[in-house]
Length: 337
Image 1 (tube, rainbow, N blue to C red):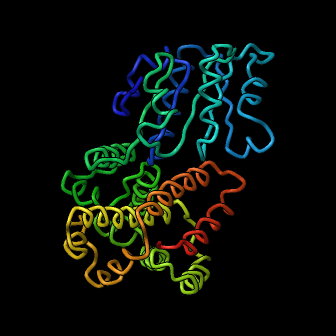
Image 2 (image 1 turned 45 degrees about the vertical axis):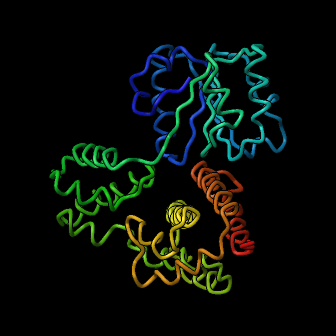
């Protein structure tokens, strides 16, 4: 059964279903669903105990083994709910098999992962099964971003006008985790410096955006030596891999959008100029040259891998750092053919 994110918090289905799949590019939304789910289940029955498992846990144990080892209530009578952070979907068949076997002595199984293509077996299963609930967590809309901005500022007792909210929203991330971080940075800056919102915005938003933007263009242009040289130069101040992945993913999505337009008969220049927001005029020539370096298959594949890598970092998985660096190397080595 599908449950939209906007209805998630107030839905009675959260205490009626046993199996949950939260997916999409918006990790922050996924995490908010997890917290809502925990709160709902605990308010319904305060004997719940939540156990977290990550992709690294599948190295030594299968999915079925992990579930079976944790299928009994603990010695205090607490019911176990298992939360699985999936960096990939190789265990999909095992998940479906275990759920359909109905031989599960477990309170809840909760899965969170990145984007899942329509028609994939696990997505279709969760959408159609009466015992399951699936919630897509897409990027925040402009309206949602305005609501988050207003809520955080109100909670901090900082007045913000609708006009300032309208100015801020388009400039902030469409991913809830990054969006919240950006707003909190603004709040801290405003409180400590007594600056107004506009001044704070000009100083704080992406204060290292130029460095990140340079890295994004070098990576998308597959300029190996220049990229690593620049990467090592900014590494001392570069501490937010999540933000970089977010910006680079958006850049690749722009390339994908333009290439799709070209297939419809647009010229590369006209397709590029249809982007909103537009490409900065000084970078138009570089952007157009990047179109020849990426094919559609590689674009879709890398965008998906970037989402999974971002989730791995946010989950503090042991292998996340090496996975990030490995993905950068893979991108630089990709053929355009």
